Image (cartoon, rainbow, N blue to C red; front, side):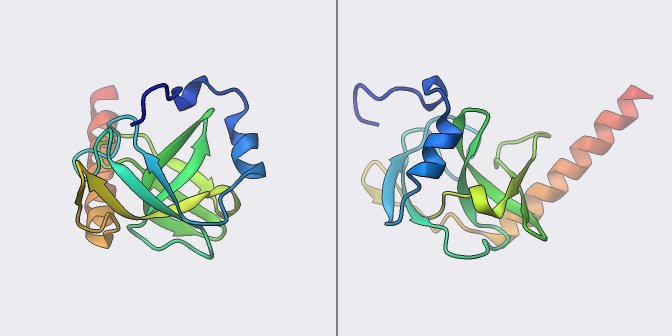
Length: 143
């Protein structure tokens, strides 16, 4: 990550700014945070292509959420909505309308080395299963 970068959560009205300036060309961004660990780690370079249609199960999408940008995996698809979660998530999921998705992560690099393709339907299914199990365990402890 370049020096002097301001944390995305510090930018007011980021959701609106992104929608006005959504990339029309592929771009390179640096990941901040650990929600996609172990697939992606803080400081990884992400090659993001603008969304040009419906994302697929397992894609890593980039979207504005609560004043910051997230890169999370698609774990479900509904009519006009994507269900997304970070690979390290233990319960949080986001319902993301197609029209707010900024792009899809097509490749990533760590310390100059290309990583395996971040999109993975298998990872999406395993993540969804893990979230369902965690939810059931939480519900059991509440009764």
